[in-house]
Image 1: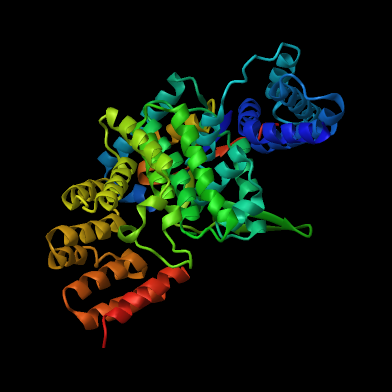
Image 2 (image 1 turned 90 degrees about the vertical axis):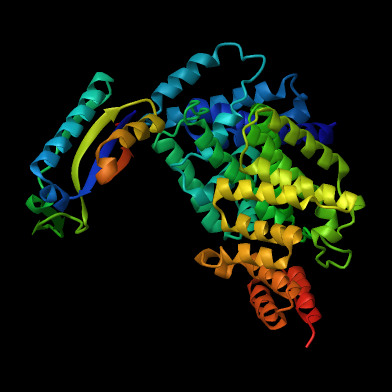
Length: 115
Length: 409
């Protein structure tokens, strides 16, 4: 089964970090990505630009509304994702627990709706 | 004849339901679909068996019919993502059925008590899926409206299917933690039934015996686990005393005043055997400690002397393992019995800062009891009043009122 690990975090955390800490953070994600790859479970992953760069679009009654900013104004924002292919929720939860984001943010595990 | 086969079908339904649901749900990954298919199969059995006679292997007959129903249902909606499961089931359909249907109930229990399932619905889910209780029965037992309960159960089953919650016994490394959740759900179920001491509410009374049934099942499936045996012992010790907990007029009788002749001796013997089995592993845990405390009290009533020193030590262990204020309150009372009310009060004061106890009846009752022994009548009266105000059970309220009145003017 495929699962999306959606990474939510407080974006201001990154700016508060020293360059060394930032470097360590990047390295931690690099190592995690490598681990997913070598286990043969990684389908895809990306880091997202900060939510300030988000544009939200909704069409009501044929009229398109464009808003500057993310859909939900909350402290934790979607910051990236991993798409993985594993046997079941237990395996997905194990990978989610190893993700660096689980320590400084939140990892939401969602099953992919197979079409 | 007709009635006989009807009874046979019902007996198979009661005995085999959990096993058949577990087998089908594990292969299909979908509890609700397995339940639907199986109830269709039961309906067909009730229709056919009286006319055609009971099949030689009723379980296999039901399984074959249910499996066909599942495949038919999946074929009707081709876009169903479970095509792998469909092929697997269809593939095995032509094969001979196994002589013995593998027992997957343990895997089903772990799926129902998965950490990804809402904690409040785990015990109800086990009762419905493994034992086949109706949503309405489960609802009244947990004091929730049937509609709300049905909705929660449906939601949990959809989650199991869509989120891919596995049907298997967890790996050794995560087993203790996961098993804890299963035990917690079974114990929650028992406690719900236990609170209704007079068994005036049939649904809740049954809850205690259903929990014991699940406990026995678990002990049968995992006979070497000390906490599984510990929980079984704990529930049996408590249930054995049920007939003595209330007088014929429905009045509350505290443990130390109970008539030991009314206890269920066979159940106590079973509890003792389970506790002995648990001790072989030499790995102490919460349920073993609680069961051992029960055992000490039972022995105390039988012999007329409670080994308070041993009870205090058991509570020391329980406080350490659970960090629960409830255990601390009971420990304080045991200390009072061993070293006097003042020492007990000292131990009780240590928990009074915990916000959770301020609305907990046993804390106030224990406080009142100790204050009364210390001669602090005014304070004792105030504590009894709070305890009475917090109690829902009329028999217990009556008992507390009498103790309060005994303080005199």
